[in-house]
Length: 119
Image (tube, rainbow, N blue to C red; front, side, top):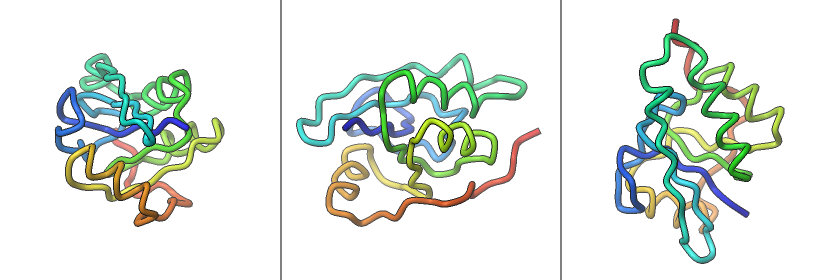
């Protein structure tokens, strides 16, 4: 199973980016091996609207089944939910710390978005 984590940098020791759709990077991690792929999300950082939906499509295309992030808006949440991707919100620390906490069962999955849509 792959996990997507929003990130301010390109590696596992980067801080989790609190934004989903407008995160600088999305890191796709295999939690068992910690092998990862970094996805540049710069196309969505300055998008007028739809950044969360597009980032959700990217996460789905990369095969992730879980997203670890700070904030996830309603449209992004609907997109992820429709793809069967579980969301964990309010995540802080480094990408590595977030993945380790997920593996230990520290997090709960969100059932709703935890921020309003950005207009």
